[in-house]
Image (cartoon, rainbow, N blue to C red; front, side, top):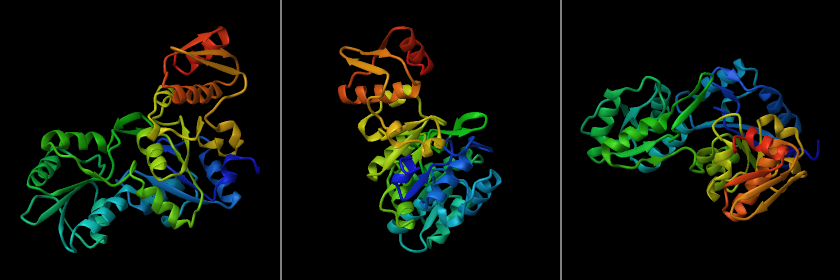
Length: 328
């Protein structure tokens, strides 16, 4: 397995929602893929923008799904937000928490006070995902932000992949406060590189690989941190989104899901692929036949190099492949 993708790295940093699991359902093959990383001798880290659970709870959830995990392998956006607040506020400063009790605990562990309603001493607002967040919570936060409190968002993911489909994420609640206050938050989690950098340092990694499903957080955060990234189509990312991705959101490798870690690295790279010819002009003309994901890798390479994203097919095989990718 010396030519496998995972063999080229000393740590693999996994996103969770949409990459390892969908809510209470594990993505098929995930336990085996993570096990293969450990067998290779590489470190495993779980890096999540979901701030609703404490690391110990994340570990319990992973273990219930058949994945090996330890608390020191989990890095959450709640921890990142607490670190940002700790750097910017004096010890004991009051932080209004919009989120779960586990988020409040992370803030308290940073030496800060936590409140749920505005008082005269509120210096900051921290906002993380919680299914219990309601209008009253947002109202308190809006008052504090309008009064000048520092606003830190754990993440701005608009949606959250679950076993039922995409549901509103923390970014949707952040958008409500952004509209109500005309203010932009400081974002602590992905796409900021802090989470990935912290996870890599904790593993003493010199060459980490990020695996994630969301272009504007997982891939963008990895690019910002200068790390290679495998984008997977098991969550939010779509072929159209990949084809039109801006430079800051372009992965180095592409696969259907994380089980591709044991496949040949060369087969997963974005670039020209056997069987497919992409002719660049006013549109990208596809000729040939072969693996559908190989076509997407080749199309991304051509689109990113040329700036052309409109696609057409020549031949039945190419037409069928584009239809399969929902690009036709």
